[in-house]
Image 1 (tube, one colour):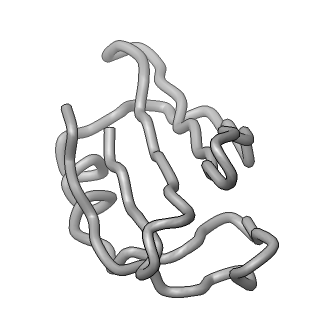
Image 2 (tube, rainbow, N blue to C red; image 1 turned 180 degrees about the vertical axis):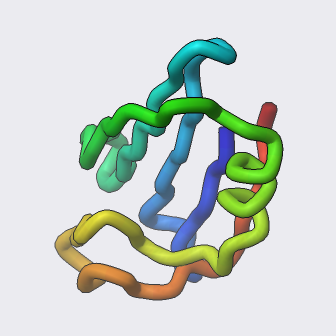
Length: 84
């Protein structure tokens, strides 16, 4: 799980990879005004360690055409934190 937050702290995003060696999925959501909104979920053939590592190492920003009332798609975020 990777959590990222906007510079002002008002918006947070979460990327979660779930699954097993035979199949997995990436889930992505945006929290704004106390409400988490699912943006996308898509299948992965395998949740490899290298994929998960690259997800953690990417610069924090809105992804998958997510937008909020304050931020346009692909807006940069301030921090990234791996929580699990």
